[in-house]
Length: 269
Picture 1 (cartoon, rainbow, N blue to C red):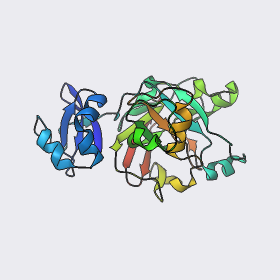
Picture 2 (picture 1 turned 30 degrees about the horizontal axis):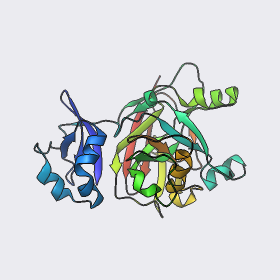
Picture 3 (picture 1 turned 120 degrees about the vertical axis):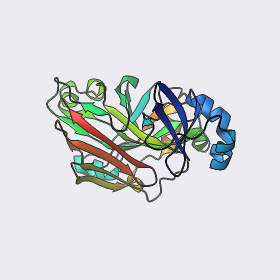
Picture 4 (picture 1 turned 180 degrees about the horizontal axis):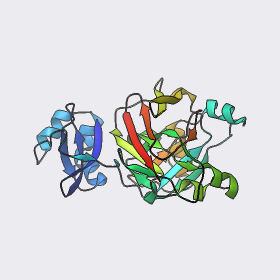
């Protein structure tokens, strides 16, 4: 099932996307949507969603997709693909390397990535992200899947020169617009065998599979929740495969994950 957040005139709402891309507004917040439709989401029952809908579906073309959630925090994972570690000539980590991106870095599908004047090298990083569905604190790996609402595409935009200059990652990862998310949250998704890729100006730049992940989503949620409480709507970025590269003004960058969709953004100064 595809959970989305959309702008319909002056209204912003969470809802469900149907097969014809029409949108059923369902709730003002993600927590309300999950609370009201938890059984239908779990069983992937669109008919039940339509039966409970207070409003008619909004046809495709009559709404604009926004970032699919409003996280209180974004927890990102570095060096989590075997091919990316080989690309950088680094050993595989023994445990996840985590860092934070601020909620103000989030933009949605079709939005603009703005290159900050402080950096001369801004890179794209295609990533699988998962969205937390219920509060998680010290969750076991066995119980972790039950705390994941679903999955979406992400771009962990990074000011590479500032990352190298600072010796840590906060500034390089935190500029406004540096966390595109979308186009929706796919609740019926498994990682096994799925491809992840990025395309820059119609040229394939990254092409890998989620089988290359070192730490899987359930392992990451368990590890991160032992450090900090994850709230509904929080986002975890799971790392990027080999092939990262520089963005320039007027570029078009897209992230595609098989079984989820395409997140496309433009770049400007």
